[in-house]
Image 1 (tube, one colour):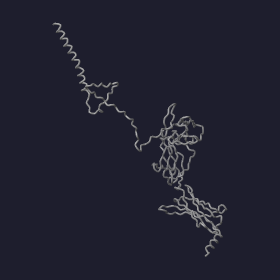
Image 2 (image 1 turned 90 degrees about the vertical axis):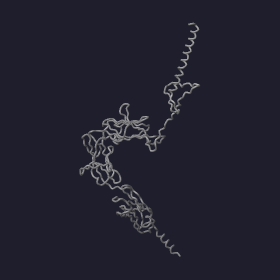
Image 3 (image 1 turned 120 degrees about the horizontal axis):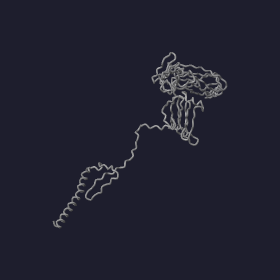
Image 4 (image 1 turned 90 degrees about the horizontal axis):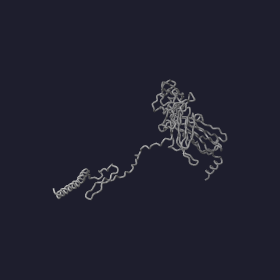
Length: 414
């Protein structure tokens, strides 16, 4: 083969290699175009999650789809619907359970008698309230210390008598004026338990309690453990009193509450507690039923005459309406008291019906004989029952003889 043919073959081989290399990127570009999904909505194109991904450069002869830019999301503010419960303010009362260990106190907590109780209340001007039994001991087992940001209450060598409510509140002071802050108040009831003593001790073996018709009555048999089962009993005749939660209810922090006092509950009652096979009775309560009025009396006053001639007799009547069998007492204030004139009073009561209701009418009459000049003035009646006192007054004028003659002469003139 001559050199010219060899050159020609080399040229043809070089041309084929160049053509093959130029087709490879074109077919790869077509394949890449086919792999891109078509979408009529630009928002449906998801942006790439790869970090450092570069956007493909635009060629003059082809367009590359770009993913839409993500919009900046605005922070969503949660709004409470109308009538939603407002979260309670944070508790300022905590219990110290160990060195550097604290826990929030709930409605109540239980400790064994003999254990120490340490409470802390956050605030700068803190006040405490605790059972009266501890107040009487002074600086004995109770210690209170105030610090810059909180106050500490410490009960050492606790006993079952320390059972009760512990509360604290902070005060806001500006200059010389201080006021309590409502949302800076917390309380808890602490039970100091003892398996051998189920009731908080009291000083008296018997306690007299009034059963009033118009208000609930409390039998304060507090227990030392919230787990104790407590029942109410009558001493004579011996029987258990039904507790239905409506007429009578029980609260371990207070005792039994008689919501609807009645005469049949009068007598000697006591509480019985049971826990772990132990049964104990409380102080005995002597219940005395009192028909208590719903309000103080409303007296009315009326004189036999507002103008009385000198030397004549007159009287002043005071009347008060009340519930049946509710006693009303009367007292008088009158000008004759200053000169030592004794009161002549008569009182009585009758049952009447007013506006379809049965009521008792009480009446007091003050008699004044041979009116004198010093009997002129204001007459006041005071009506009193167990609920309170009310007054009613009227004025009496004493006519002098000269004034009567002058008025008679004037009447006879033509």
